[in-house]
Length: 152
Image (cartoon, rainbow, N blue to C red; front, side):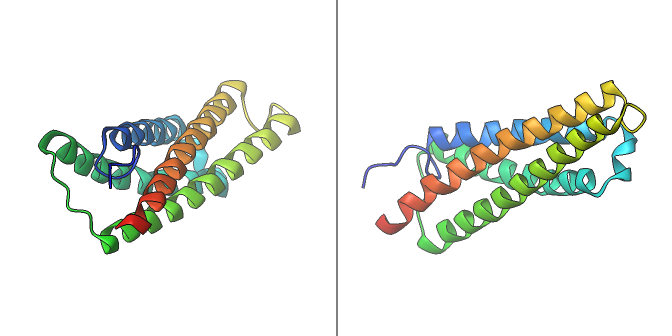
């Protein structure tokens, strides 16, 4: 079968993984620039999930770089299944973390300025937006690989 764009080992997959790594790292950095995020469980959850997404994405990005430049990647159903399950699990966790962070930030903004200064809440909103973008790319990657699985 021809290579499916976006599946593991293609240049489109490399672009998806690179974007996922960039957005999850940005989300982590926006949240961790200030130490006040420890006060809320939703923010700690986002930091934990993005801390898992970054190494996962970087590892698979390295696999994609190797595959794109050396043109060799044996496709095995078990390995592809593990990658799909890992992508789906981290995708759902990222969505949950982004939603909880966005809703907590919205609540803090509308309760009053004493709970969240404008500069701090803006960073939290940017972190949630980057987490949503990371989730979107992760879901796309897992769906492309899921589409490839029956042909293996």
